[in-house]
Length: 485
Picture 1 (cartoon, helix red, strand yellow):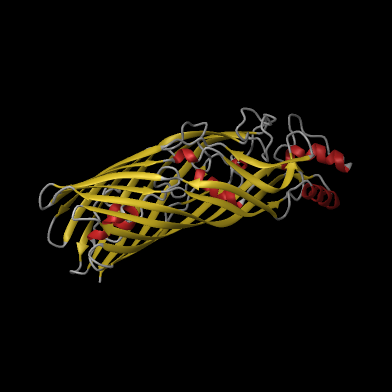
Picture 2: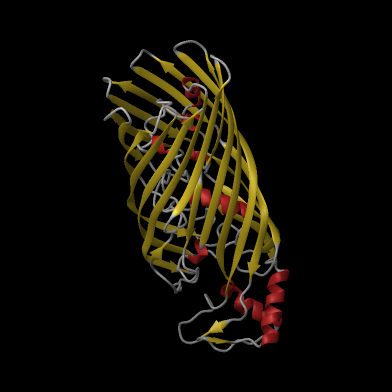
């Protein structure tokens, strides 16, 4: 089953090609901040302050540009995977593999313009959420989403006001574009006996101990996109010449993803490696499934929210060479508690061929999270500043029973270092490297739509269950060019 909204909803709720921050955040939107494990939000050293604390734009004179490129090398692997059909029969297929691409490039752009001594305007174009996960098509977990992909981009015009020598504030509008894709397999084999009876077909006797489960797999593919809108607020306070604190708030963004779901049906029923239906009978079976709601192209939608966040951060200049940074960010992931994927056509519920449900229900039950970052900078020489940081990022997943197969998210630790090199008075380059260690985890997944047993909740699902172990980490290399006009 799939659907465009499911695609975004599920990628958000769980896709893991870019496992850089907890939940489905991309993780970093600036190389200068990446070098301190994103602890330096209060610094306001370049135009990327638009994302971390837009009030910092008042610290930038003239016109400032920052362009960043992050190249991510993620690794998310699963092993010891098992799965069963509602009948109790084991699902056959691959039990281990890698879920992510080898390299993922992402760019961010920022521009600020000082309008006068009190007001500065800016524009940020950056990636807040991005993820992709794909299992092998024969994975034993294929019925619990086989592929998810999410791409988002924010366009964020912002304006900052200098209230006095100590206080600045900012407000901005966020226009968020989201594009998503999803693939999920369906166990049509479970309907083979009833379907054969309805068509007057006689199936050959099954081998001892064998059922029709897994003999006729199909799958749904969904693609779609949507625009959503939110806002950001920021405040920055220069306590004295050496100390500064700030607060940054980014609102939730609501999406109603509306798209199409395309069902690819099995061409035959394969038992013992051999098709058991004649071409005419197979065509009749497919036509019947189409009438039952599994259309070649139907509508689908789902409502979701990307989470709001609140960040408290500070910096302190210990001496002319050493500066320390700290950041505490709270994210309201609990907004992703439930999602309903609504299909255009009703489909057979459990135990029958009568179309009577058009929903798939997801219940991730995520919890609110926090991230703590500490970093520092050392002015090694006039042109070169060295930077480093460490961060602890808490997962929103409450337990292995709520961990999604498409997002085996878990607690993670960031280790980052890098530097800034001044090319001349007008330009500089930031470079950074981060290693992100994600805690090993396991997942117990099912297609029960929030119920405790198959069929307890009537939904569009194959009602399979499964489990797997996961190991993950990521390497991020970043380069950023800064120019002041």
